Image 1 (tube, rainbow, N blue to C red):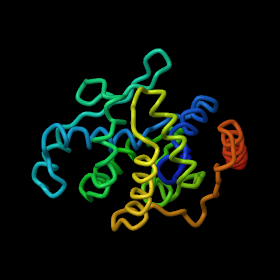
Image 2 (tube, rainbow, N blue to C red; image 1 turned 60 degrees about the vertical axis):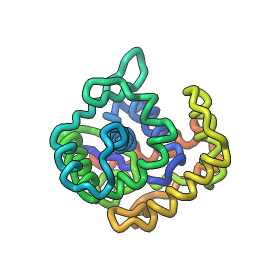
Image 3 (cartoon, rainbow, N blue to C red; image 1 turned 180 degrees about the vertical axis):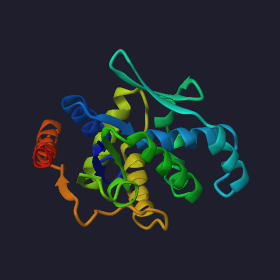
Image 4 (cartoon, rainbow, N blue to C red; image 1 turned 135 degrees about the vertical axis):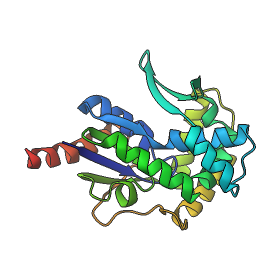
Length: 225
């Protein structure tokens, strides 16, 4: 039987980090939706596919292969068999991924794939429309947020740890741009689901956020036993 935990929120709110920790702690399958859109974005950049070239996008979606593997406790993203874990986090992809995720054909393709992945599993998934669009009947819905400045600080630290050099001001500007783009999108806009629980992590540590969300999940699981 499926059990779905949906964690939505803006870019840099810590969704990916928190989701991976909770998945490991609670034995849930973790699906990185952001990495899927980033991999598609990288493919489009490499193959010079424009956002409005519907024919090339359709061919790409029919042929692209994105996989997730764990190698020595590291989550690896494979694009057509190539390890692109670092490359999908670099500036070129950062600048385009929001626009790519708004292309309706791409959004629908990824949504269908996510639903197939989740069928019959206990999963935790993060994104911008998991609880509102992909899994509107998710067992647990969390909206994880933080101020743009705090999110930019976190993204800067993540980048530095991965050897990616992008100035703080540029990261903050990109986050503000993405917030506006995601919230005003005509395709699955970012918003808090009516039945989602808001967790503002601005002044919380990672362990504090993990503990709070795990308590919410455990409480829901106990009700379903």
